[in-house]
Picture (cartoon, rainbow, N blue to C red):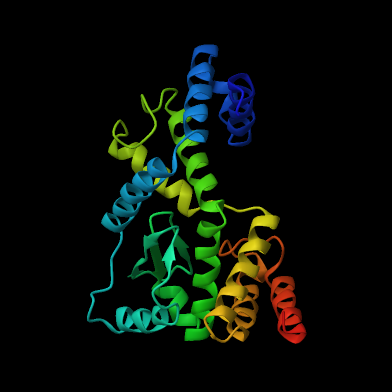
Length: 252
């Protein structure tokens, strides 16, 4: 169980890292701590509702490939490899964002978004490896924590936040801020490695080519000297490629 005093202290550290703690008065910090406490106690249904609204917000701000486009048809073919699996019990809803950015992400409501820039540089097996990795963050609970953090930081920066957990009290600007923070969230080394292994195991379970995960990392390693924000830079993409290659060699 969370201690409110500990959470209030935690938000001070969090905001300090963002360069904003020095601008908060005691009343604002208390409010921020309360917002972080609410975020940390969001239920799974709250997270699903927040993910629904965040995904809608992101879709509204993005150019989505038409269903009859080559990108959408290709993603449909790629996703068929996963069969009828669900994500946290939610039916997977996937779309392509038309942008040169190299990215993909998934949310706890089954929302999966893949950027055309990523599709342009990856073959189908590599895309499945990356998508499996992003779905791993959801299945392993990492995305829930990222959403809680995005909610807390957005609410804290307004020195108030929603009156109660959920999305009902969030303004459009708050929701947009939460969505942006979630999409740009950086996962820990442990979380990244766990998502890598989840993708490997999922590909193996679905009888798909695990080698695609290796070559996907190798391609990502070439972006910005291996420091691309896509799938983080710690551990490095090259070392992660080697880890998957070692698992393939061991047959495990």
